[in-house]
Image (cartoon, rainbow, N blue to C red; front, top):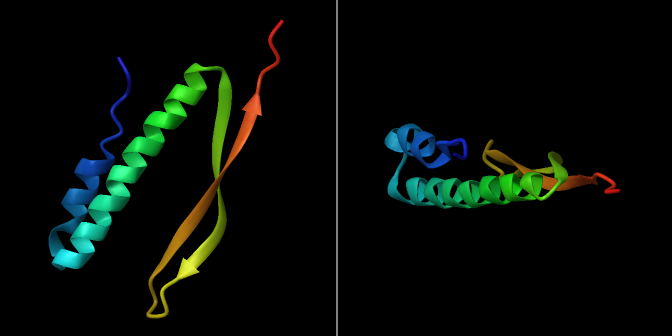
Length: 79
């Protein structure tokens, strides 16, 4: 059985003090992260190692920021 990441559930818990636009944006991030986590698990099961590394930080101009990521992929040689 695959491990549960609970990204969506955690985001919904944290969104209770946000306005509707912020909640919608966080739901989108949570859904995309859930799909990303599933893709990473599939890649690992296919024989590669995946590391997500911050490539930049996006600043919104009012003190808000978000990390932008790139994958670093390592393949294992097969005999």
